[in-house]
Length: 95
Image (cartoon, rainbow, N blue to C red; front, side, top):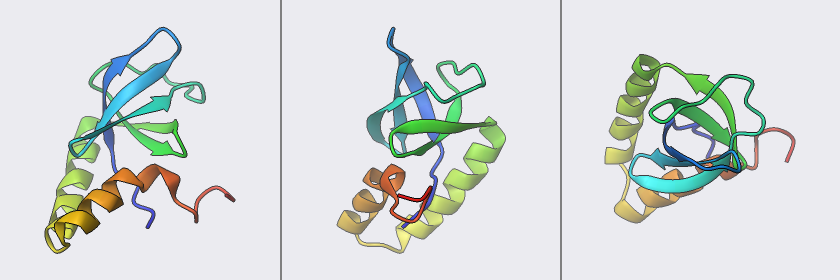
């Protein structure tokens, strides 16, 4: 399932790797493909471990609210799996 859930940057290390929070699940992603400057607190969209787009907070919050509504209709394990596997979508980017 391809959702592109907005993820909030919580840390950036010296190797241009960010720790992001995606609806309570943290992961590490590369910022190497980003043309925009990324700072702690920014929201980004991820694809296969790389930040691809920076989005503004209002747009991120609106999207997150819609995702929360969708997730409420799912079982707990299904919810976690959707969030954890979001950046590994088989249908994106010619994988």
